[in-house]
Amino acid sequence: MPHSSEPLPAPRLGEPYLLTPGPLTTAFSTKEAMLKDWGSWDADFRAMTKSVCDQLVALAGDTTGAFVCVPMQGSGSFSVEAMLGTFVPRDGKALVLANGAYGLRAAETMRYLGREYTLIDKGDYMPPRGDEVAAALDADPAITHVVAIHCETSSGILNPVAEISEAVYSRGRKLLIDSMSAFGALPLDVNEIRYEAMVSSANKCIEGVPGFGFVIARRSELEAAKGNSHSLSLDVHAQWAYMEKTGQWRFTPPTHVVAAFLEALRLHAAEGGVAGRGARYTRNRDVMVEGMRGLGFETLLKDRWLSPIIVTFFCPADPAFVFSDFYEKMKQKGFIIYPGKLTVVESFRIGCIGRMDEHVMRRVVQAAKEALAEMGVASAAPPEAAIAERAKLAA
View 1 (cartoon, rainbow, N blue to C red):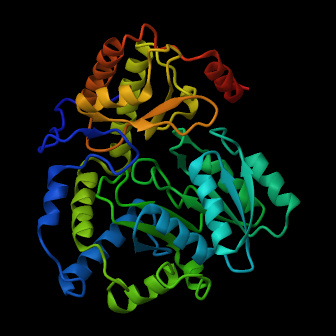
View 2: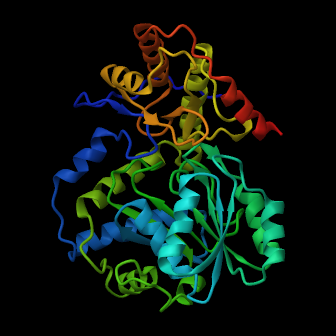
View 3: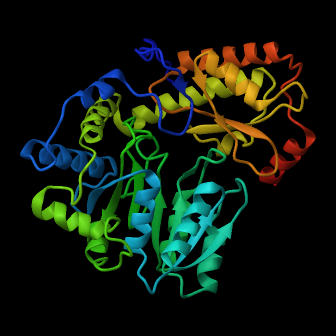
């Protein structure tokens, strides 16, 4: 496993590290790129937009021009809604695969859109598997599209999108992937995993700042999607057609965010692209998980399902442990962690992504150790209910 030698520089303004699934800690040069103003119609900015799109399509592995990238203003959820509303026809039906908050949000989006959908809900974290998808598609010929979450950050699980894709296309249906928190660090190569469109965001694994998402879609599928959208501003086809014609975004783009993203893409390439970024995050996870387990904490997921994006830990059973106190103590020590999203047992999450390395992760573990001591927590072991919950995954 590669070990980083030179530590990455600490946040220059002294702000705490964001151990969250995004927005996340960014490089100073990425922030610095936002100091300049750009005209959204100007040729220089149009060239910036084109460069972003070309680089993102290349990251997805397309070398034939079969795929295009369409940036969309707003948060990641804006782009997810744009993708669903553009690619699922009004008379289509989606099978949404959920094992956490983001799958459920996709289903809720379909409900808002008034499009037909059905849901496989695996609860807090159990992965949707290919055979379940195949069975659902066999049982319901009306389903036209399957919606899958690549990395479900509610639990930190990495879902098996390759086997899901095989099940979808073996049944002649189409796959849409929400790779919000995975694209750029985990492979999602169009030559290896088939899909019609995927969506991600500027402020995740490419380490830009929040302000836009992007849809990478099969060109032929996008051409066929004209008129599908429920929304003027969230119409991916209309945004793409306008960009093809003028080089401009239809409505005011987040110019400074695009400039920052170009710098983030430069740093991403310098690190070795998807493989290099993924290796650093994996090392972050391994060092942090090993250290936290050494303190007595237990992870929700067995190693097989742990993503290098974010990790869920059970809260200790010790009555002296109060998450809000733990959070504040970690923040005082320079680390902002994330509350848990499990419904069955108390948990919290620690992100592995952003401009940080294994040296930082060792300090995170030390901070957790100190926080437990200050709170008078004798043991970080979780309650019995948590271990029973985890046993379900092994079964």
